[in-house]
Length: 72
Image 1 (tube, rainbow, N blue to C red):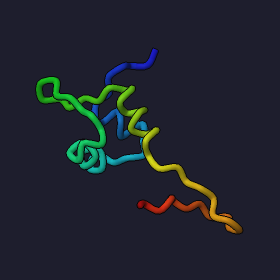
Image 2 (image 1 turned 120 degrees about the horizontal axis):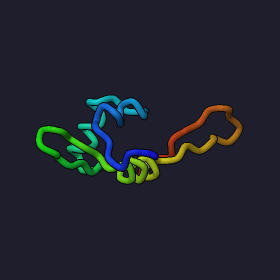
Image 3 (image 1 turned 45 degrees about the vertical axis):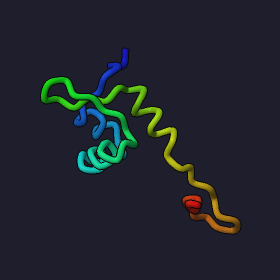
């Protein structure tokens, strides 16, 4: 059974973000986190929702390379 709550170290192990990148996303409000005493925790479902909101890569016409959609 998967744990419903993850520490920052556990999220880093899951990938693809570093500890610094995770705290950056948390501070920007992109990834919800909670404090349990001195421990920063992330609900597994919040992390999965965060990953689902990341932009999808789309193949560029006539190319083997993947490109990220342009922001508007």
